[in-house]
Length: 247
Image (cartoon, rainbow, N blue to C red; front, side, top):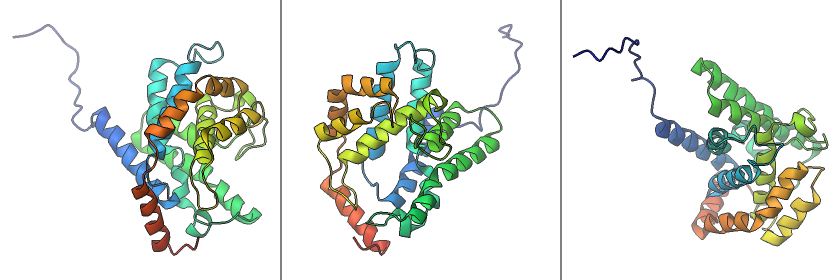
């Protein structure tokens, strides 16, 4: 029996459902991050931080036009790809236990451009506008930019930095501060909050820092709920040995 619907039939059998795409994105991101010895829950933490900041700012006059429900959902899904470009950085630099030389740091900084280019190729293969990839490319390319223009790779300043990258920048720095690294121990939540506050208006958008300070207890709760386990730390040690990195 005809329903009277004369619209063309669209074959979507080759388009995987959104949850499958999300799972693939997360799997690729987690695999890429093993090269940086970030084995654990750090991607989940960063997703939660960014989403919490975005919700807090969603009613702010400067951000409410951008931070819609749909955009925040896309933002959350894009976070795991922000450091995808680190796959292209040599182990001798990526896993170096001490301070990088100026030359090594120049090479490290290329991960932002490598990430952008990788995601751009994915966009070209998709052949259509994919919001997830657009936001992921912004984050990957610009999350090391600083509000005062002293960041990289473009030296963007102020509102020229995409909103997605501004949120990712703060989430990334906070998580690095509270986490153990080959070159440092973890700082406490309060120590980390104080450092972020001191970077207000220089490294970070002042309004983003204000939002972070307003919800810092929630941020701490996320950090505790998704903290890395002793088993995660053991996996990192195994990876260092496999990579023949002396720490």
